[in-house]
Length: 416
Image (cartoon, rainbow, N blue to C red; front, side, top):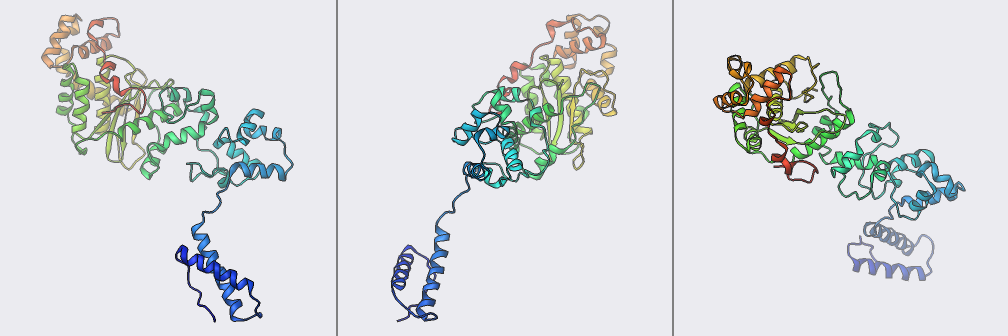
């Protein structure tokens, strides 16, 4: 009697189908008979069910390399150009060391092994191994990045970090996401001013670290265009008179929808601070390169003026980096940010008539600071700047790094 073949949905259906297939294979029947048709149809539905239930064999990178070695009669020494040394060849083939992206590129190009096989099991997706590299990964400040704990989960030393530079940097970059806004931020020009240009790779790394910290902060309000005014800047400056003034400033900015991030500068950046946009969110970032209160407050207000007047959403002008020591800064934006910050801290009408201008004593500096309700360090800094003598009034300059101690260093540190 002919049995109806049904789609297999359960293990019981599968067991029944296998038993029926075995029974049919033991029978003899004429070609073209209904039993032959039943057997062929059973084989198809069984195969379909097995495909849906049995995980496909995942491609194995090491097996692919061994297969190509056997195919091309290659010895271990022939793989040295791809892995760097005979010991690394042995470690890779014995699965004691993972393939780096740099190794995968060489194997894909030199031995024509499909990249999707070599990268199997990796977190990396969407890499075009035939395209030119977007970055020279060896130029990133790997030593400093390693010291700061930027490479989460990596336990190797600097030598190993250099070998896996592309892997580590790409993972670090993924920390700010792969959405269109994040990618646009990374591609946006790094606007610098002055004659002493900063290292682009170090500046990009710092920028990503700042974005990563900023995106972890929760602020109570959204920024509204026009929030920053002369009075707003002066109210901000008046917070300097408090011992925890810098932290109060961070809260003051947050209440206005602006994130303040503290992230140390990298070598070859000469960086005091930056202003940037992350979508609609303004970010002010300071390095505390100079551990002085006057420098902190001037840099803070300088960057806030950039937020107020110069950052433009929807354009390439979403990141401005500043080395405030560079006397050759001559752009209109920099002059405006300097002038507005200076005026907010000590209005020119007050400075022009101040006793400390003619007689730079601690007593006169404190008197002007009390009148303006600002920290004496700001007055001391102005005196030093105007006289170009940074040795005077040292006892008034104060320190700021200790206030943000828990926000410096690793990206895993507390940031609020």
